[in-house]
Length: 612
Image (cartoon, rainbow, N blue to C red; front, side, top):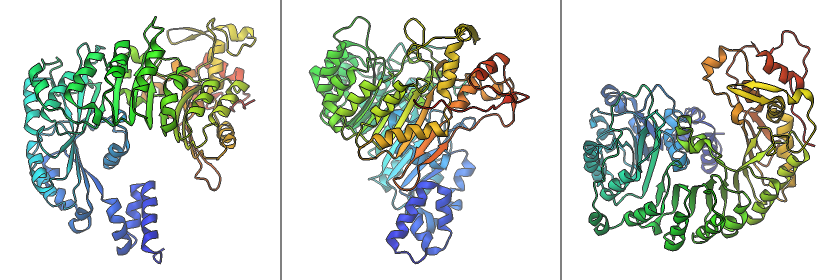
Protein backbone atom coordinates (compact mmCIF):
# COMPACT_ATOMS: atom_id res chain seq x y z
CA UNK A 1 0.00 0.00 0.00
CA UNK A 2 2.98 2.30 0.47
CA UNK A 3 3.63 2.17 -3.29
CA UNK A 4 0.31 3.74 -4.18
CA UNK A 5 0.36 7.16 -5.89
CA UNK A 6 -0.34 10.10 -3.52
CA UNK A 7 -3.75 10.68 -5.15
CA UNK A 8 -4.86 7.12 -4.38
CA UNK A 9 -3.50 7.34 -0.85
CA UNK A 10 -5.59 10.46 -0.30
CA UNK A 11 -8.65 8.62 -1.65
CA UNK A 12 -7.95 5.68 0.70
CA UNK A 13 -7.61 8.05 3.66
CA UNK A 14 -10.95 9.67 2.81
CA UNK A 15 -12.67 6.28 2.56
CA UNK A 16 -11.20 5.16 5.89
CA UNK A 17 -12.35 8.41 7.47
CA UNK A 18 -15.93 7.58 6.47
CA UNK A 19 -15.65 4.33 8.44
CA UNK A 20 -14.52 5.77 11.78
CA UNK A 21 -12.04 8.12 13.38
CA UNK A 22 -10.43 5.13 15.09
CA UNK A 23 -9.64 3.57 11.70
CA UNK A 24 -8.24 6.89 10.52
CA UNK A 25 -5.99 7.12 13.59
CA UNK A 26 -4.72 3.59 12.97
CA UNK A 27 -3.86 4.48 9.37
CA UNK A 28 -2.00 7.60 10.51
CA UNK A 29 0.28 5.44 12.66
CA UNK A 30 1.48 3.19 9.79
CA UNK A 31 4.43 5.43 8.96
CA UNK A 32 5.38 9.08 8.60
CA UNK A 33 4.15 9.34 5.01
CA UNK A 34 0.71 7.99 5.84
CA UNK A 35 0.59 10.28 8.88
CA UNK A 36 1.19 13.31 6.65
CA UNK A 37 -1.59 12.23 4.29
CA UNK A 38 -4.11 11.46 7.05
CA UNK A 39 -3.40 14.43 9.34
CA UNK A 40 -5.37 17.06 7.33
CA UNK A 41 -8.45 14.80 7.47
CA UNK A 42 -8.02 13.56 11.03
CA UNK A 43 -7.35 16.93 12.64
CA UNK A 44 -9.44 19.21 10.42
CA UNK A 45 -12.23 19.30 12.99
CA UNK A 46 -11.38 18.85 16.67
CA UNK A 47 -13.51 19.12 19.80
CA UNK A 48 -12.25 20.25 23.19
CA UNK A 49 -14.24 19.90 26.43
CA UNK A 50 -14.77 22.93 28.67
CA UNK A 51 -14.95 21.17 32.02
CA UNK A 52 -12.64 22.94 34.39
CA UNK A 53 -9.81 25.43 34.52
CA UNK A 54 -7.31 22.60 35.05
CA UNK A 55 -8.26 20.75 31.87
CA UNK A 56 -8.19 24.02 29.93
CA UNK A 57 -4.63 24.68 31.07
CA UNK A 58 -3.58 21.27 29.73
CA UNK A 59 -4.87 21.81 26.20
CA UNK A 60 -1.59 22.87 24.64
CA UNK A 61 0.34 20.26 26.62
CA UNK A 62 -1.84 17.45 25.29
CA UNK A 63 -1.73 18.47 21.64
CA UNK A 64 1.28 17.68 19.49
CA UNK A 65 1.69 21.20 18.15
CA UNK A 66 3.76 20.32 15.09
CA UNK A 67 1.47 17.46 13.96
CA UNK A 68 -1.98 18.78 14.78
CA UNK A 69 -2.35 22.54 15.02
CA UNK A 70 -1.43 23.41 11.39
CA UNK A 71 -4.27 21.18 10.17
CA UNK A 72 -7.06 22.44 12.44
CA UNK A 73 -9.64 24.37 10.45
CA UNK A 74 -12.67 23.86 12.70
CA UNK A 75 -12.59 24.03 16.48
CA UNK A 76 -15.55 23.06 18.69
CA UNK A 77 -15.67 23.99 22.38
CA UNK A 78 -18.13 21.88 24.37
CA UNK A 79 -19.55 22.19 27.89
CA UNK A 80 -22.35 19.70 28.45
CA UNK A 81 -24.23 17.82 31.13
CA UNK A 82 -22.45 14.50 31.55
CA UNK A 83 -25.52 12.88 33.07
CA UNK A 84 -26.98 12.65 29.56
CA UNK A 85 -25.74 11.61 26.15
CA UNK A 86 -25.35 13.69 23.03
CA UNK A 87 -26.49 12.23 19.69
CA UNK A 88 -22.86 11.36 18.87
CA UNK A 89 -19.59 10.96 20.82
CA UNK A 90 -18.10 14.24 21.99
CA UNK A 91 -15.20 14.10 19.54
CA UNK A 92 -17.62 13.83 16.60
CA UNK A 93 -19.91 16.69 17.61
CA UNK A 94 -18.30 19.07 15.11
CA UNK A 95 -18.99 16.72 12.20
CA UNK A 96 -22.53 16.14 13.52
CA UNK A 97 -23.31 19.86 13.50
CA UNK A 98 -21.90 20.22 10.01
CA UNK A 99 -23.86 17.30 8.54
CA UNK A 100 -27.21 17.76 10.33
CA UNK A 101 -30.08 20.02 9.36
CA UNK A 102 -30.67 22.93 11.77
CA UNK A 103 -34.12 21.66 12.76
CA UNK A 104 -32.72 18.17 13.49
CA UNK A 105 -29.88 19.31 15.76
CA UNK A 106 -30.48 18.50 19.43
CA UNK A 107 -27.70 19.56 21.79
CA UNK A 108 -29.92 21.21 24.34
CA UNK A 109 -28.36 19.82 27.54
CA UNK A 110 -25.35 22.09 27.60
CA UNK A 111 -23.78 23.64 30.69
CA UNK A 112 -22.63 27.03 31.78
CA UNK A 113 -18.91 27.74 31.50
CA UNK A 114 -17.57 30.25 34.00
CA UNK A 115 -13.88 29.42 33.69
CA UNK A 116 -10.99 31.42 32.33
CA UNK A 117 -10.76 31.86 28.55
CA UNK A 118 -6.97 32.40 28.69
CA UNK A 119 -5.93 28.82 27.70
CA UNK A 120 -8.46 28.78 24.87
CA UNK A 121 -7.27 32.16 23.64
CA UNK A 122 -3.69 30.87 23.65
CA UNK A 123 -4.80 27.91 21.53
CA UNK A 124 -6.76 30.07 19.08
CA UNK A 125 -3.69 32.23 18.52
CA UNK A 126 -1.68 29.14 17.56
CA UNK A 127 -4.12 27.83 14.95
CA UNK A 128 -2.89 29.33 11.66
CA UNK A 129 -5.73 27.95 9.50
CA UNK A 130 -8.77 28.36 11.76
CA UNK A 131 -11.87 28.91 9.62
CA UNK A 132 -14.72 28.03 11.98
CA UNK A 133 -15.21 28.18 15.75
CA UNK A 134 -18.28 26.61 17.36
CA UNK A 135 -19.02 27.23 21.03
CA UNK A 136 -21.49 24.86 22.69
CA UNK A 137 -21.54 26.41 26.13
CA UNK A 138 -23.50 29.02 28.04
CA UNK A 139 -20.93 31.70 28.80
CA UNK A 140 -19.82 35.30 28.38
CA UNK A 141 -18.16 35.07 24.99
CA UNK A 142 -17.01 38.65 24.37
CA UNK A 143 -13.36 38.23 25.43
CA UNK A 144 -12.83 35.18 23.23
CA UNK A 145 -14.64 36.68 20.23
CA UNK A 146 -12.54 39.85 20.40
CA UNK A 147 -9.37 37.76 20.06
CA UNK A 148 -10.80 35.70 17.20
CA UNK A 149 -11.77 38.87 15.35
CA UNK A 150 -8.22 40.19 15.74
CA UNK A 151 -6.28 37.01 14.89
CA UNK A 152 -8.68 35.32 12.43
CA UNK A 153 -10.90 38.06 10.95
CA UNK A 154 -12.33 35.72 8.29
CA UNK A 155 -13.24 32.98 10.81
CA UNK A 156 -16.93 32.16 11.22
CA UNK A 157 -18.11 31.82 14.82
CA UNK A 158 -21.22 29.81 15.73
CA UNK A 159 -22.62 30.03 19.26
CA UNK A 160 -25.20 27.92 21.11
CA UNK A 161 -26.50 30.11 23.90
CA UNK A 162 -29.16 29.83 26.59
CA UNK A 163 -31.99 32.35 26.67
CA UNK A 164 -33.23 33.10 30.16
CA UNK A 165 -35.37 36.07 29.16
CA UNK A 166 -34.08 38.29 31.93
CA UNK A 167 -32.69 41.82 31.50
CA UNK A 168 -29.31 40.73 32.88
CA UNK A 169 -29.00 37.97 30.30
CA UNK A 170 -30.01 40.29 27.45
CA UNK A 171 -27.26 42.64 28.65
CA UNK A 172 -24.76 39.77 28.39
CA UNK A 173 -25.95 39.24 24.83
CA UNK A 174 -25.13 42.82 23.88
CA UNK A 175 -21.48 42.26 24.88
CA UNK A 176 -20.80 39.81 22.05
CA UNK A 177 -23.63 40.01 19.52
CA UNK A 178 -21.99 42.81 17.55
CA UNK A 179 -18.76 40.87 16.97
CA UNK A 180 -17.87 40.97 13.25
CA UNK A 181 -16.89 37.27 13.25
CA UNK A 182 -20.25 36.11 14.62
CA UNK A 183 -21.94 34.11 11.86
CA UNK A 184 -24.51 31.80 13.49
CA UNK A 185 -26.51 31.79 16.74
CA UNK A 186 -28.65 28.98 18.13
CA UNK A 187 -30.82 30.04 21.06
CA UNK A 188 -31.88 27.30 23.48
CA UNK A 189 -34.99 27.82 25.62
CA UNK A 190 -36.00 25.45 28.39
CA UNK A 191 -39.66 24.69 28.88
CA UNK A 192 -40.87 23.69 32.32
CA UNK A 193 -42.05 20.12 32.96
CA UNK A 194 -45.58 21.07 34.03
CA UNK A 195 -46.97 20.74 30.53
CA UNK A 196 -47.38 24.43 29.78
CA UNK A 197 -47.64 25.53 26.21
CA UNK A 198 -45.88 28.63 25.02
CA UNK A 199 -48.62 31.20 25.45
CA UNK A 200 -46.32 34.03 24.39
CA UNK A 201 -44.10 33.65 21.39
CA UNK A 202 -40.34 33.12 21.85
CA UNK A 203 -39.76 34.99 18.59
CA UNK A 204 -39.61 38.19 20.64
CA UNK A 205 -36.27 37.19 22.13
CA UNK A 206 -34.96 36.33 18.66
CA UNK A 207 -36.03 39.72 17.34
CA UNK A 208 -34.16 41.46 20.18
CA UNK A 209 -31.10 39.36 19.38
CA UNK A 210 -31.29 39.99 15.64
CA UNK A 211 -31.66 43.72 16.19
CA UNK A 212 -28.23 43.71 17.85
CA UNK A 213 -26.60 41.22 15.46
CA UNK A 214 -27.65 42.29 11.98
CA UNK A 215 -24.50 40.74 10.52
CA UNK A 216 -25.37 37.10 11.33
CA UNK A 217 -26.52 34.77 8.55
CA UNK A 218 -27.87 31.84 10.60
CA UNK A 219 -30.42 31.98 13.41
CA UNK A 220 -32.01 28.94 15.06
CA UNK A 221 -34.26 28.32 18.06
CA UNK A 222 -34.45 25.14 20.14
CA UNK A 223 -37.11 24.56 22.78
CA UNK A 224 -36.46 21.61 25.06
CA UNK A 225 -37.55 20.24 28.40
CA UNK A 226 -35.53 21.37 31.38
CA UNK A 227 -34.26 18.28 33.26
CA UNK A 228 -35.45 17.59 36.79
CA UNK A 229 -31.90 17.89 38.10
CA UNK A 230 -31.14 21.17 36.33
CA UNK A 231 -29.44 23.34 38.91
CA UNK A 232 -29.22 26.66 37.09
CA UNK A 233 -32.07 28.86 38.20
CA UNK A 234 -33.54 30.85 35.37
CA UNK A 235 -36.41 33.17 34.70
CA UNK A 236 -39.22 31.43 32.86
CA UNK A 237 -41.23 34.55 32.15
CA UNK A 238 -41.01 36.14 28.76
CA UNK A 239 -39.38 39.52 29.16
CA UNK A 240 -40.97 42.56 27.56
CA UNK A 241 -39.55 43.31 24.14
CA UNK A 242 -36.59 45.65 24.29
CA UNK A 243 -37.45 47.18 20.91
CA UNK A 244 -39.78 49.99 19.99
CA UNK A 245 -41.57 50.08 16.64
CA UNK A 246 -39.50 53.07 15.55
CA UNK A 247 -36.26 51.20 16.30
CA UNK A 248 -37.41 48.26 14.21
CA UNK A 249 -38.49 50.39 11.26
CA UNK A 250 -35.41 52.65 11.24
CA UNK A 251 -32.73 49.96 11.60
CA UNK A 252 -31.37 48.28 8.46
CA UNK A 253 -32.74 44.79 7.96
CA UNK A 254 -30.57 41.74 8.51
CA UNK A 255 -29.84 39.37 5.63
CA UNK A 256 -30.35 35.96 7.19
CA UNK A 257 -29.69 32.96 4.96
CA UNK A 258 -30.98 30.34 7.44
CA UNK A 259 -33.86 30.74 9.88
CA UNK A 260 -34.88 27.63 11.84
CA UNK A 261 -37.84 27.53 14.23
CA UNK A 262 -39.12 24.40 16.04
CA UNK A 263 -42.22 22.71 14.70
CA UNK A 264 -44.02 23.35 17.99
CA UNK A 265 -44.00 27.09 17.33
CA UNK A 266 -46.79 28.59 15.25
CA UNK A 267 -46.15 30.94 12.33
CA UNK A 268 -48.90 33.54 12.04
CA UNK A 269 -49.41 36.29 9.48
CA UNK A 270 -48.36 38.98 11.97
CA UNK A 271 -45.19 37.08 12.87
CA UNK A 272 -44.31 36.69 9.21
CA UNK A 273 -44.75 40.43 8.77
CA UNK A 274 -42.49 41.11 11.76
CA UNK A 275 -39.80 38.73 10.48
CA UNK A 276 -39.96 40.55 7.16
CA UNK A 277 -39.28 43.80 9.02
CA UNK A 278 -36.32 42.30 10.89
CA UNK A 279 -34.61 40.47 8.02
CA UNK A 280 -34.83 40.65 4.25
CA UNK A 281 -36.52 37.34 3.45
CA UNK A 282 -35.32 37.59 -0.15
CA UNK A 283 -31.89 36.38 1.06
CA UNK A 284 -33.28 33.36 2.92
CA UNK A 285 -32.18 30.06 1.37
CA UNK A 286 -33.26 27.74 4.20
CA UNK A 287 -36.40 28.18 6.32
CA UNK A 288 -37.83 25.94 9.04
CA UNK A 289 -41.07 27.81 9.56
CA UNK A 290 -42.75 25.92 12.40
CA UNK A 291 -46.48 25.19 12.05
CA UNK A 292 -48.96 26.97 9.79
CA UNK A 293 -52.58 26.39 10.75
CA UNK A 294 -54.28 29.63 9.70
CA UNK A 295 -55.49 30.70 6.26
CA UNK A 296 -54.23 34.22 6.91
CA UNK A 297 -50.62 32.99 7.06
CA UNK A 298 -50.90 31.23 3.71
CA UNK A 299 -52.49 34.35 2.23
CA UNK A 300 -49.76 36.61 3.65
CA UNK A 301 -46.99 34.54 2.05
CA UNK A 302 -48.87 34.46 -1.26
CA UNK A 303 -49.45 38.22 -1.33
CA UNK A 304 -46.06 39.34 0.00
CA UNK A 305 -44.04 36.86 -2.09
CA UNK A 306 -41.01 37.72 0.08
CA UNK A 307 -38.81 34.76 -0.91
CA UNK A 308 -36.42 34.97 -3.85
CA UNK A 309 -33.58 32.56 -2.99
CA UNK A 310 -35.40 29.91 -0.92
CA UNK A 311 -34.24 26.37 -1.72
CA UNK A 312 -34.97 24.37 1.45
CA UNK A 313 -38.26 24.45 3.37
CA UNK A 314 -39.31 22.64 6.57
CA UNK A 315 -42.96 23.11 7.45
CA UNK A 316 -45.85 21.58 9.36
CA UNK A 317 -49.29 22.12 7.81
CA UNK A 318 -52.31 21.56 10.05
CA UNK A 319 -55.58 22.13 8.23
CA UNK A 320 -58.21 23.79 10.44
CA UNK A 321 -61.69 22.31 10.65
CA UNK A 322 -64.37 23.49 8.24
CA UNK A 323 -61.98 25.13 5.79
CA UNK A 324 -62.79 23.85 2.28
CA UNK A 325 -60.59 26.57 0.76
CA UNK A 326 -57.47 25.29 2.54
CA UNK A 327 -56.09 23.10 -0.32
CA UNK A 328 -56.49 25.99 -2.77
CA UNK A 329 -54.71 28.37 -0.39
CA UNK A 330 -51.86 25.86 0.07
CA UNK A 331 -51.49 25.58 -3.70
CA UNK A 332 -51.33 29.36 -4.14
CA UNK A 333 -48.79 29.69 -1.34
CA UNK A 334 -46.45 27.07 -2.79
CA UNK A 335 -46.82 28.57 -6.26
CA UNK A 336 -45.53 31.87 -4.86
CA UNK A 337 -42.26 30.22 -3.71
CA UNK A 338 -39.19 29.80 -5.90
CA UNK A 339 -38.52 26.19 -7.02
CA UNK A 340 -37.35 24.12 -4.04
CA UNK A 341 -34.77 21.34 -4.05
CA UNK A 342 -35.57 20.20 -0.48
CA UNK A 343 -38.95 19.88 1.22
CA UNK A 344 -39.66 18.54 4.72
CA UNK A 345 -43.46 18.56 5.05
CA UNK A 346 -45.34 17.30 8.11
CA UNK A 347 -48.76 17.77 9.65
CA UNK A 348 -52.39 16.78 9.34
CA UNK A 349 -53.25 17.15 5.69
CA UNK A 350 -54.83 15.00 3.01
CA UNK A 351 -51.91 13.27 1.25
CA UNK A 352 -53.79 13.46 -2.06
CA UNK A 353 -53.19 17.24 -2.24
CA UNK A 354 -49.40 16.81 -2.24
CA UNK A 355 -48.95 16.01 -5.96
CA UNK A 356 -51.45 18.59 -7.24
CA UNK A 357 -51.07 21.48 -4.80
CA UNK A 358 -47.34 21.30 -4.10
CA UNK A 359 -45.32 18.97 -6.31
CA UNK A 360 -46.74 20.18 -9.60
CA UNK A 361 -44.72 23.33 -8.91
CA UNK A 362 -41.71 21.98 -6.99
CA UNK A 363 -41.49 18.31 -7.96
CA UNK A 364 -39.26 18.81 -11.04
CA UNK A 365 -36.49 20.42 -8.96
CA UNK A 366 -36.76 18.39 -5.74
CA UNK A 367 -33.84 16.11 -4.93
CA UNK A 368 -34.90 15.41 -1.32
CA UNK A 369 -38.42 14.96 0.06
CA UNK A 370 -39.19 14.09 3.69
CA UNK A 371 -42.75 13.34 4.70
CA UNK A 372 -42.18 11.93 8.18
CA UNK A 373 -40.46 13.18 11.30
CA UNK A 374 -37.47 12.18 13.36
CA UNK A 375 -37.69 12.32 17.14
CA UNK A 376 -35.01 14.98 17.29
CA UNK A 377 -37.29 17.16 15.18
CA UNK A 378 -39.42 17.66 18.29
CA UNK A 379 -36.40 18.41 20.49
CA UNK A 380 -37.64 16.24 23.38
CA UNK A 381 -40.86 18.19 23.76
CA UNK A 382 -43.09 15.34 22.61
CA UNK A 383 -42.06 13.36 25.68
CA UNK A 384 -43.43 16.06 27.96
CA UNK A 385 -46.30 17.71 26.15
CA UNK A 386 -49.09 15.46 24.83
CA UNK A 387 -50.81 18.26 22.95
CA UNK A 388 -50.59 19.00 19.24
CA UNK A 389 -47.57 16.79 18.70
CA UNK A 390 -49.42 13.75 20.03
CA UNK A 391 -51.82 14.13 17.12
CA UNK A 392 -51.08 12.84 13.66
CA UNK A 393 -47.65 14.15 12.73
CA UNK A 394 -47.57 12.99 9.12
CA UNK A 395 -49.94 11.16 6.75
CA UNK A 396 -49.66 7.54 5.70
CA UNK A 397 -49.41 7.42 1.91
CA UNK A 398 -51.37 4.90 -0.19
CA UNK A 399 -49.93 3.39 -3.40
CA UNK A 400 -51.92 5.61 -5.80
CA UNK A 401 -50.66 8.82 -4.20
CA UNK A 402 -47.06 7.52 -4.15
CA UNK A 403 -47.36 6.80 -7.87
CA UNK A 404 -48.51 10.39 -8.49
CA UNK A 405 -45.67 11.76 -6.36
CA UNK A 406 -43.14 9.74 -8.37
CA UNK A 407 -44.54 11.13 -11.61
CA UNK A 408 -43.99 14.68 -10.31
CA UNK A 409 -40.42 14.13 -9.01
CA UNK A 410 -38.13 12.88 -11.79
CA UNK A 411 -34.93 14.04 -10.02
CA UNK A 412 -35.73 12.86 -6.49
CA UNK A 413 -32.78 11.05 -4.88
CA UNK A 414 -33.74 10.94 -1.18
CA UNK A 415 -37.18 10.13 0.22
CA UNK A 416 -38.64 9.61 3.70
CA UNK A 417 -42.25 8.45 3.68
CA UNK A 418 -44.73 6.51 5.82
CA UNK A 419 -46.69 3.55 4.42
CA UNK A 420 -49.09 1.04 5.94
CA UNK A 421 -48.32 -2.64 6.44
CA UNK A 422 -51.14 -5.08 5.66
CA UNK A 423 -49.79 -8.43 6.89
CA UNK A 424 -48.20 -9.01 3.45
CA UNK A 425 -51.51 -8.52 1.59
CA UNK A 426 -51.26 -7.61 -2.14
CA UNK A 427 -52.19 -4.00 -1.25
CA UNK A 428 -48.90 -3.79 0.63
CA UNK A 429 -46.96 -5.16 -2.34
CA UNK A 430 -48.55 -2.43 -4.48
CA UNK A 431 -46.97 0.14 -2.17
CA UNK A 432 -43.46 -1.18 -2.85
CA UNK A 433 -44.23 -1.30 -6.59
CA UNK A 434 -45.22 2.38 -6.41
CA UNK A 435 -41.96 3.26 -4.64
CA UNK A 436 -40.08 1.66 -7.54
CA UNK A 437 -41.47 4.33 -9.88
CA UNK A 438 -39.00 6.98 -8.65
CA UNK A 439 -36.48 6.75 -11.50
CA UNK A 440 -33.30 7.93 -9.73
CA UNK A 441 -34.14 7.30 -6.06
CA UNK A 442 -30.98 6.37 -4.13
CA UNK A 443 -31.85 6.66 -0.42
CA UNK A 444 -35.17 5.58 1.05
CA UNK A 445 -36.17 5.95 4.69
CA UNK A 446 -39.32 3.87 4.79
CA UNK A 447 -41.53 4.26 7.85
CA UNK A 448 -43.65 1.13 8.18
CA UNK A 449 -46.86 1.73 10.10
CA UNK A 450 -47.20 -1.61 11.88
CA UNK A 451 -50.33 -0.70 13.84
CA UNK A 452 -53.22 -2.85 12.58
CA UNK A 453 -55.10 -1.17 9.73
CA UNK A 454 -58.80 -0.71 10.45
CA UNK A 455 -61.86 0.92 8.91
CA UNK A 456 -63.98 3.59 10.57
CA UNK A 457 -66.18 0.94 12.21
CA UNK A 458 -63.17 -0.71 13.87
CA UNK A 459 -63.04 -3.78 11.63
CA UNK A 460 -59.92 -4.91 9.77
CA UNK A 461 -58.82 -3.31 6.52
CA UNK A 462 -58.86 -4.94 4.03
CA UNK A 463 -62.00 -6.76 5.27
CA UNK A 464 -61.73 -10.33 6.55
CA UNK A 465 -63.63 -12.64 8.83
CA UNK A 466 -62.57 -12.55 12.47
CA UNK A 467 -62.45 -15.66 14.61
CA UNK A 468 -64.15 -15.72 17.98
CA UNK A 469 -60.72 -15.55 19.61
CA UNK A 470 -59.76 -12.44 17.62
CA UNK A 471 -62.96 -10.66 18.65
CA UNK A 472 -62.24 -11.09 22.36
CA UNK A 473 -61.11 -8.05 24.33
CA UNK A 474 -57.58 -7.79 25.64
CA UNK A 475 -56.59 -5.60 28.63
CA UNK A 476 -53.84 -3.29 27.46
CA UNK A 477 -52.34 -0.58 29.67
CA UNK A 478 -55.32 1.43 30.93
CA UNK A 479 -58.04 0.09 28.65
CA UNK A 480 -59.11 -2.77 26.43
CA UNK A 481 -58.55 -3.52 22.76
CA UNK A 482 -59.68 -6.32 20.47
CA UNK A 483 -57.25 -9.20 20.27
CA UNK A 484 -57.19 -9.01 16.48
CA UNK A 485 -55.73 -5.50 16.76
CA UNK A 486 -52.72 -6.53 18.80
CA UNK A 487 -52.39 -9.78 16.86
CA UNK A 488 -52.30 -8.00 13.47
CA UNK A 489 -49.86 -5.43 14.85
CA UNK A 490 -47.61 -8.27 15.97
CA UNK A 491 -47.73 -9.82 12.48
CA UNK A 492 -47.00 -6.47 10.83
CA UNK A 493 -44.05 -5.93 13.16
CA UNK A 494 -42.48 -9.31 12.42
CA UNK A 495 -39.73 -8.11 10.09
CA UNK A 496 -36.92 -10.57 9.47
CA UNK A 497 -34.13 -10.84 6.90
CA UNK A 498 -36.27 -12.58 4.30
CA UNK A 499 -38.93 -9.86 4.37
CA UNK A 500 -36.32 -7.08 4.25
CA UNK A 501 -34.77 -8.71 1.18
CA UNK A 502 -38.17 -9.04 -0.45
CA UNK A 503 -39.01 -5.36 0.11
CA UNK A 504 -35.62 -4.15 -1.12
CA UNK A 505 -35.63 -6.38 -4.20
CA UNK A 506 -39.22 -5.47 -5.06
CA UNK A 507 -38.30 -1.79 -5.16
CA UNK A 508 -34.87 -2.18 -6.77
CA UNK A 509 -35.95 -4.56 -9.53
CA UNK A 510 -38.93 -2.34 -10.32
CA UNK A 511 -36.70 0.69 -10.95
CA UNK A 512 -35.65 1.27 -14.53
CA UNK A 513 -32.17 2.40 -13.55
CA UNK A 514 -31.67 0.16 -10.48
CA UNK A 515 -30.56 3.28 -8.58
CA UNK A 516 -31.57 2.39 -4.99
CA UNK A 517 -28.46 2.16 -2.79
CA UNK A 518 -29.74 2.55 0.77
CA UNK A 519 -32.96 1.37 2.40
CA UNK A 520 -33.68 2.03 6.07
CA UNK A 521 -36.81 0.60 7.68
CA UNK A 522 -38.34 2.52 10.59
CA UNK A 523 -41.22 0.55 12.17
CA UNK A 524 -43.93 2.77 13.63
CA UNK A 525 -45.48 0.93 16.58
CA UNK A 526 -47.90 3.58 17.85
CA UNK A 527 -49.52 2.65 21.15
CA UNK A 528 -47.48 -0.56 21.29
CA UNK A 529 -44.22 1.36 21.63
CA UNK A 530 -42.73 0.46 25.07
CA UNK A 531 -43.14 3.46 27.35
CA UNK A 532 -41.33 2.44 30.54
CA UNK A 533 -37.62 2.96 31.07
CA UNK A 534 -35.36 0.07 30.08
CA UNK A 535 -34.30 -0.63 33.67
CA UNK A 536 -37.90 -0.81 34.90
CA UNK A 537 -39.02 -2.91 31.94
CA UNK A 538 -36.21 -5.42 32.37
CA UNK A 539 -37.33 -6.19 35.93
CA UNK A 540 -40.77 -7.25 34.67
CA UNK A 541 -41.96 -10.13 32.46
CA UNK A 542 -41.81 -9.53 28.72
CA UNK A 543 -44.91 -7.67 27.48
CA UNK A 544 -46.55 -7.61 24.06
CA UNK A 545 -45.11 -4.15 23.44
CA UNK A 546 -41.58 -5.37 24.10
CA UNK A 547 -42.15 -8.37 21.84
CA UNK A 548 -43.39 -6.12 19.04
CA UNK A 549 -40.42 -3.79 19.44
CA UNK A 550 -37.95 -6.65 19.14
CA UNK A 551 -39.81 -8.28 16.24
CA UNK A 552 -39.70 -5.03 14.27
CA UNK A 553 -35.97 -4.44 14.65
CA UNK A 554 -34.14 -1.63 12.86
CA UNK A 555 -33.11 -2.93 9.47
CA UNK A 556 -30.81 -1.30 6.95
CA UNK A 557 -29.88 -2.47 3.46
CA UNK A 558 -26.78 -0.99 1.86
CA UNK A 559 -26.05 -1.75 -1.79
CA UNK A 560 -23.11 0.20 -3.26
CA UNK A 561 -23.91 -1.16 -6.76
CA UNK A 562 -21.42 -4.00 -6.59
CA UNK A 563 -21.55 -7.34 -4.83
CA UNK A 564 -24.51 -8.40 -2.73
CA UNK A 565 -26.66 -6.01 -0.69
CA UNK A 566 -25.47 -5.77 2.91
CA UNK A 567 -28.27 -6.30 5.43
CA UNK A 568 -27.96 -5.28 9.07
CA UNK A 569 -30.40 -5.25 11.95
CA UNK A 570 -29.22 -2.38 14.16
CA UNK A 571 -31.66 -3.13 16.95
CA UNK A 572 -30.02 -4.41 20.12
CA UNK A 573 -32.27 -6.10 22.72
CA UNK A 574 -32.05 -4.57 26.17
CA UNK A 575 -32.27 -7.94 27.96
CA UNK A 576 -29.09 -9.99 27.99
CA UNK A 577 -30.78 -13.21 29.16
CA UNK A 578 -33.99 -15.15 28.66
CA UNK A 579 -37.09 -13.92 30.47
CA UNK A 580 -40.62 -15.14 31.06
CA UNK A 581 -43.50 -13.52 29.20
CA UNK A 582 -46.75 -12.14 30.55
CA UNK A 583 -49.10 -15.14 30.06
CA UNK A 584 -51.86 -13.26 28.20
CA UNK A 585 -49.34 -11.53 25.95
CA UNK A 586 -47.51 -14.76 25.26
CA UNK A 587 -50.82 -16.42 24.38
CA UNK A 588 -51.40 -13.94 21.55
CA UNK A 589 -47.86 -14.51 20.27
CA UNK A 590 -48.43 -18.27 20.24
CA UNK A 591 -51.70 -17.88 18.36
CA UNK A 592 -49.49 -16.72 15.46
CA UNK A 593 -46.33 -18.76 16.03
CA UNK A 594 -47.16 -21.88 18.10
CA UNK A 595 -44.29 -23.21 20.17
CA UNK A 596 -43.76 -26.58 21.81
CA UNK A 597 -40.65 -25.45 23.62
CA UNK A 598 -40.59 -25.59 27.42
CA UNK A 599 -40.10 -23.39 29.30
CA UNK A 600 -41.60 -20.75 27.01
CA UNK A 601 -39.18 -17.93 27.70
CA UNK A 602 -38.48 -14.98 25.46
CA UNK A 603 -37.12 -14.86 22.81
CA UNK A 604 -39.30 -17.43 21.06
CA UNK A 605 -39.09 -18.62 17.45
CA UNK A 606 -40.95 -16.62 14.81
CA UNK A 607 -40.81 -15.63 11.14
CA UNK A 608 -42.27 -12.88 9.00
CA UNK A 609 -45.40 -13.26 6.90
CA UNK A 610 -44.29 -13.16 3.24
CA UNK A 611 -45.50 -10.65 0.67
CA UNK A 612 -48.34 -12.03 -1.44
